[in-house]
Image 1: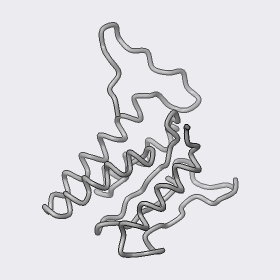
Image 2: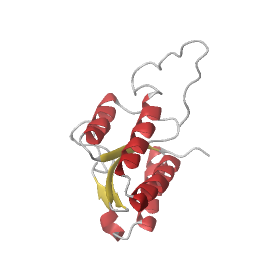
Image 3: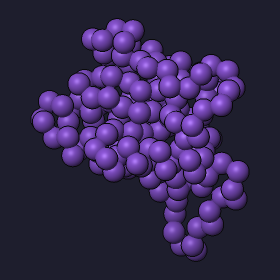
Length: 143
């Protein structure tokens, strides 16, 4: 059964609560639960886990980023912060890599992992825009 973005977000929150020693302070809700004016592109959450602060935009399996979300997340990375997007499975895989980065002291690994995930999601195209056309003979990169 396919999960909605809201279900993905709830699973992501549960995972971070389970892994973080910060308890309820491990999750900062950056988007209000109801529609209201806010800055475009601001991710759903800021997670505090393994000594990192991670901006995270939750997506359903077949969802797409908006251009504003992509710009926000990549700007975070360009300024030394961690940011990513995706499903529960994407977050779980990223957290494994973040734990390794923390253990080895390799912050660059964490940033590369985040860039890889954002890149994979941006290859799907952006919400409200036609899907990108692939060149003949080129397979789409998988997440």
